[in-house]
Amino acid sequence: MSKKIYVNEHILDYSEIKAAQTILDSGLLSSSNINGGKYVKDFEKNIAQFLDVKYAVAINSGTSALYASLLSLNIKSGDEVIVPSFSFTATASAVVATGATPVFVDISSSNYNIDISLIKSNITKKTKAIIPVHLYGHPVDVDLIAEITSPDHIAIIEDGAQSLGSSINGKKCGTLGNLGCTSLYPTKVITSGEGGVITTNDETLYEELLRIRNHGLDESGQTTRFGLNLRMPEIESAIASIQLSKLDDFIRIRRRNSDILSDIIGNFNLNLPVELENTFLNRYLYTISLDKSRSEVMNYMEKQGINTAVYYRTPIHKMPYYHSMNDGYDLPNTDLASSKVLSIPIHSGLSEDDVQNIGNKLNDVLKTIY
Image (tube, rainbow, N blue to C red; front, top):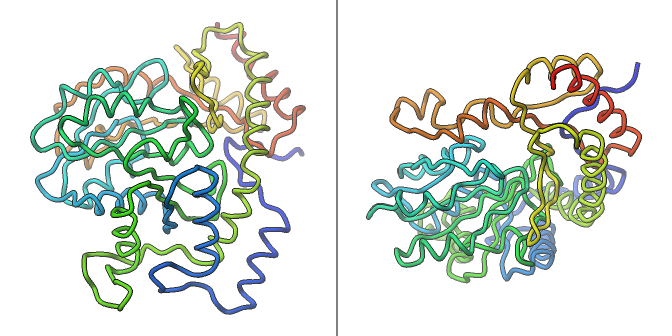
């Protein structure tokens, strides 16, 4: 029986195992130093160089990265933060954790990112930040958002959980706003098991973040502001650096696999992923749009040993917790996308033959529907 194929799989080898064993043998698993341990500092240096950004702060998850970023901007109760609803729930829960209110905005039907044309009408005197999400690895035009938000001094936090390695106008995601956040969860393009990172060119925010991730302590060991233990352990940091060194290869394979799949199913009207002239996509998720019979396609592929997934079946604003806060949202593109999208495996652990097989099976079931 052949191995089941999943939408996302982490790709590790002996180099990650060896690094973990070295740290286990050393006994130095973490550090409460404000600047982190050796491997934390190494990873921060490596990813800052990769992204061509001044500062990077390693943290224990992508969610914590969003939360810490909001805290560094002094977002608090009574404030509002604009977010898309078509995202993972952490985009909004990080806002709620500060006491602020998430304000949900609809998405563009072309790439599932926040509809920039709707931002201005959702800005109020309470709006302090916006969190555009580079969904499925597609970069948001943050420069255009900045033109809209800068007169009101609204900070921009990129939710780049899915977009490490993507770029727009020659600038990489994570370097476009005041702060950039990414995730290193096992389903992402690179992983350290758990973990995340915040990037910025602002020295003041950087210094705030160092204290926020370490109980608010300064270099003398005094709590000078609110903080928590959001530190990344040494093993995760070492694995993250090794994975980062493989990122270009991972993306190259994903892009190859994506192109193979598009060639096979390109004759169907499925709204395939499009790379605009000014963008470069890491191809994190290969997401198509099905006008009908999504469940039929999913069931057929599952029987062939090929997992597919819906990101996201329920928009955040319709989840019980948020719906109970405010049930007045009308986000038609968000609702439509949640009923149509389907992600197909193209990750870097798949060979060309694997993707050819996935494409052929998908082609077979699509022919029975369209």
